[in-house]
Length: 210
Image (cartoon, rainbow, N blue to C red; front, side, top):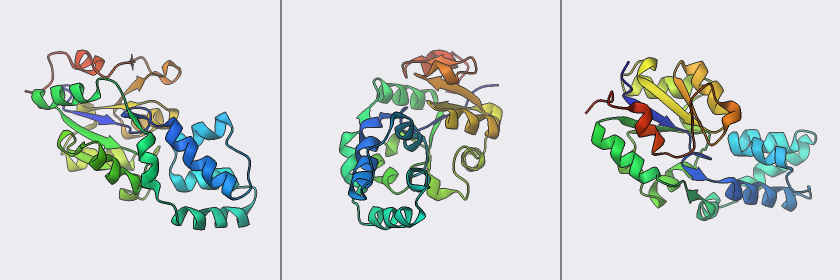
């Protein structure tokens, strides 16, 4: 089956965002008298929605969790976008996919910040669809976000592949019935691994639509 759409996760795939996420959640924790994030907590926050992350960090103290959510409402999350670093060769790959007639989509557990990221990095012309956690009832790893992309673009699951860097992404792809490509994380690979975006072009070979 010809691959007609490449679905990208955002954090860790389009951008190196560990620093940005760590800064955000450490700010919340320290402001509410909690110790900084552990490495495991940083990884959890990196792959889940902001609401799931806050719950995870403060789940032992519901009253503090409620305060954290209120504190979050007053934050300008756009300030952390400055700490994102675009992954190498991403733009070159997106342009090449467009030239080949391959559709592209973003599937992310980000919420309100995604539109600002698209604007800041001028990603709009390079993606046919962006689906965030706000666009679905059930965020990743539920299949709903992938199913929404496939339905909107009128594609079957065999026509798409999902590029992700976390186990949440792998499960999302599996739940949505699309092929999964592990990016810079061999531990989650189902057999297809890349460490450079340009490798996507080689994966598609000459079978992509033009």
